Every structure is written in structure tokens, then in C-alpha cells.
Image (cartoon, rainbow, N blue to C red; front, side):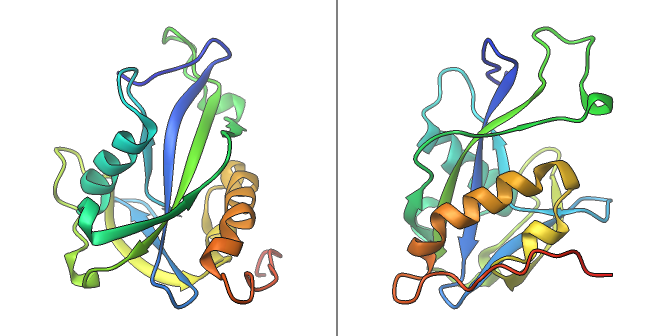
Length: 172
């Protein structure tokens, strides 16, 4: 059971996994064309960190010793769902998500990535992309929260130079 707060936002963790060379991992949604960062809900009895490690294992098959936690966003980042995605028949009604984002450095062989460890895998493929590319590829209503997470965590991902400037225009 996911935790939905009194304002209708579902608690969620997001993971930006970097290879340490300016690339981040995005995963392809199973049976769909969409791409996104691994993310998932936080249960009412879970800590943010335990939810992050559980989701890391369920979604991409990694264990705590496969990554270093570089940092996380200071506060929740929120997005609202478009009206057509709100399921009014559920109680409580979820109008969007509030997310804590973690920047993780992969320290194991990328071959350790797996998508078959949960009963209903969310992803079936992944790829490494330039730091800002996920903003262009994620579903439109999540783009602003991706931009905010990457902006806040960018100085940690690129401690010597800061992140490259974003080129967030959509490709024709």
C-alpha cells in the first residue's frame, strides 16, 4: 500500500544512476515506448532510504553494495497528474507524486542490471544517455520535476566542473 498524503500526493523515490562519466541510466517501460528513471512508491512504514533500496532491487536488480549514494534532493519535488490520469474511483484520490530523488554512482559491472526480479517488472531495457537527455524523453508531465532533480543534484554529479548546461529544447 502506497502512502498518499492529505493533499493527494503519493510518496515516491526516484533514482538517478550515473556511470561517473557524465551519463545516466534511463529504463524503458515494459511493453511501451516510454523511458524514465527508476522510481517507486514509499510505503507508510518505510523510510525514504529503505524504499529507495527496495525499488533499486525491484526495478533494476541492484543491491546496496552495487551503488554509492552521492546525495539526494533536500525536499520533496512534486508534480501533478493530468486530469485524465487521476483515478477518481480510488480512495484516497492521488493527484500526483511527491518525490525524493537520489543520485547514485554505479560501482559494479553494468551487466548486474536486471529487470526480472519483481512479479510484474516495470522495465525491459535500459541505456546510458547524456545527463540532460531524460528531460527530453520522459512523459511530458514529469519533465519539470526531472529538470529540478537534475539541476539540484548536478553539482554532486560533476563536482569538478558542475553539470554541462542543459539543452532542453525538444528535438524536431
